[in-house]
Structures are given as C-alpha cells and as structure tokens.
Length: 134
Figure 1 (cartoon, helix red, strand yellow):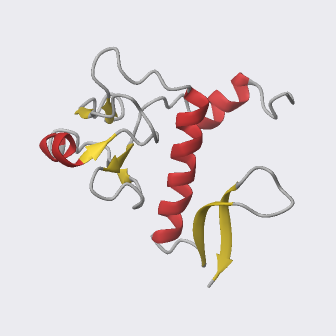
Figure 2 (tube, rainbow, N blue to C red):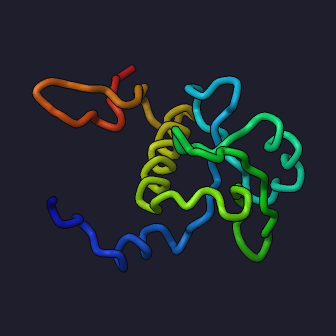
C-alpha cells in the first residue's frame, strides 16, 4: 500500500480542524445529491432529519441520524445514536468532499457537470467524479 500523499497535520490544517458531519442521505432517494446542513439550522431541521434523512455512508448498519445544534460556538452537524457510526474518518471526509464538489458545481460556480463513480478501462478503481464540460 502506498504512503498517503499528505501527513495528518497537513490534512488537519486543510480541513480547518473540521470533524462535523454536515451531509446526510435522503432515505427516499438515496442516489440523489446529499442534503447539506447549513450552519445554524440544526434545530429547524431536526424533525425533518429524523423522518427523511440517514447517514451518508452507504451500507451503514445504523443509519439513523439527528442534528446537533452547536452554532454559534461550533458548527452544527448530524450525529448517529450513541455507539453507532464509527466510520473511518478518511471515508467520511472523502464522501463529504465529493458532495462538496458536486454542490459547488450544482450551484453554478463552474461550468461542468459531474457524474459519480465512473469506471474506465484499464483502471481497476473507479474515478470519484467524472468531468463533463457543458
């Protein structure tokens, strides 16, 4: 296995120390773009979250989520029940990074379209995002 491109200190600095979970998956449309929790809205969307959203990590064995209101001292986020979740931070950050890029594109902040997890030969691993110029 190859060494990581960046050490933990570089990644932590880039992430600004962010460890919150601001994305959730729609239960009724799991392939739809992830739901993004705007900071400061956790209380407003708590009931909606419990009814309509779930953990963004595919295959999570306990995907139930609620919101945690921390604003303005810290960032609001989603959380699992006590003892659930425990996903590898790299996987969660990777998933949320892809969702952030997709959200940025959908908001029209660049001129391209994206599709997720595209397999291209001769690669054995899928690309996370494929760029399609508009």
